[in-house]
Image (cartoon, rainbow, N blue to C red; front, side):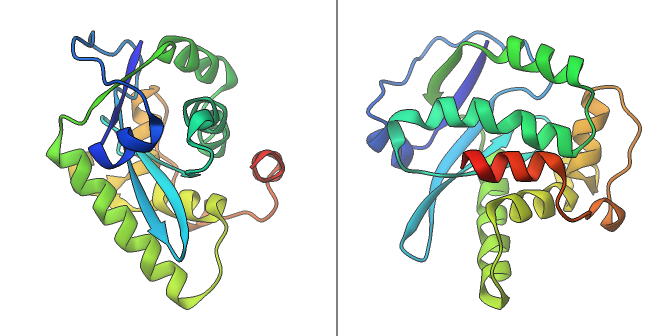
Length: 183
């Protein structure tokens, strides 16, 4: 079980009542915190993992399917970080069911705001896909992770060696094609 912690701005269009008594997370990445952001006229949701600051970027609409799309999209991002399939399956099993709750960490909210600013800067210069943006955010250095790349913090949570950097930027990975097909 894991909490999907939403800002008030996200809870309203989700039309879900926030739970108050949430058990401790049983997964490696911890609770997830999410907020709605806008780029151009399109709303997106940025969801960030508590322990690693891994970010998942999803189109906000339709809000009714946001939680399902979040659970479908996360394995693709973990595959990009070369997390073994057995560990991905175990993580996804430990995360369900998701409990919708209110945010409880100013630090994670600050990470969401930082990602939103980075995305705005990236989008000013050129066109990016959501997959490219998520990959770029996984390579960013994070203060809550002792100034190591976010992707390496994720790999450490799974007991794997660090390996993030520009060398990972490979065009047309199979996971990317599958994720873009489903989005």
